[in-house]
Image (cartoon, rainbow, N blue to C red; front, side, top):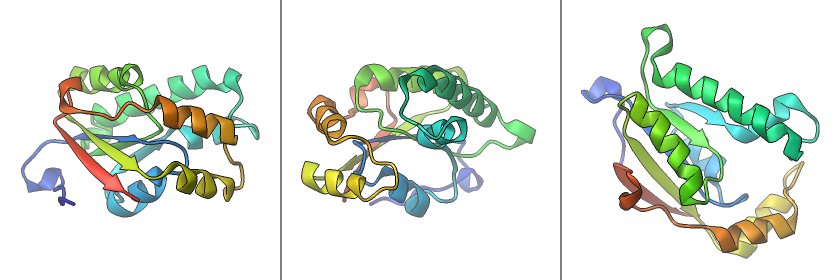
Length: 162
């Protein structure tokens, strides 16, 4: 695992885009290995809106809140520009393009962090959560997962096995 340096080390901010199925360890990785970066979590935004955070009707509102937060942080809220982590599944290329375009509009490079694990491990971790994602959804996402690669426009791809 390579150690990333912050803006104070002579480089500008980066957007770290987590990629992985529910239960793969994305949030745990973000809280431990990327703890010095601002973190925007789509699940947390949905939890702010409702006791039923997986209701489809919440998705447009949560995405609008996420985009507003990312624009403020990438744009240097209060004159501060530092690394930002997007904590969401981001399992498809099409989903990731939204973040790549947004970061490009602020001239911020994007690093994909691909958090991988066995399906059974992810499902067991997910079931242990207070509000688990249904098993069939985790399985469907696992089958639909498109690993990130540099051809999408990432500055780098970091592979994490949990």
